[in-house]
Image (cartoon, rainbow, N blue to C red; front, top):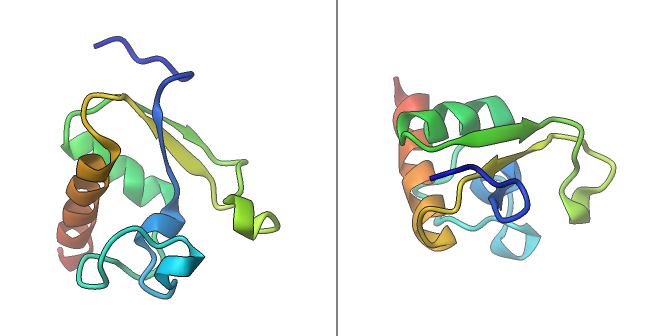
Length: 97
């Protein structure tokens, strides 16, 4: 599949942050969330899944506009909910090792 930034899924580190509530942007259950997720960790997880991606380090999560943690754009090869679940599981494995 050819990577297209215009149609790619956007993943923010905030989706996987255990310190955030669902209302603050966390998208995964707490058992899959991790401490201090970064775009570099997200990139490692997405790479292990064999997906194409681009990192944009200068971007800020809209409700956290002052904190530029960055985001990652991932090829649209599956539903976003499935992608988030797979990335969360991979992040948990990475953090445990």
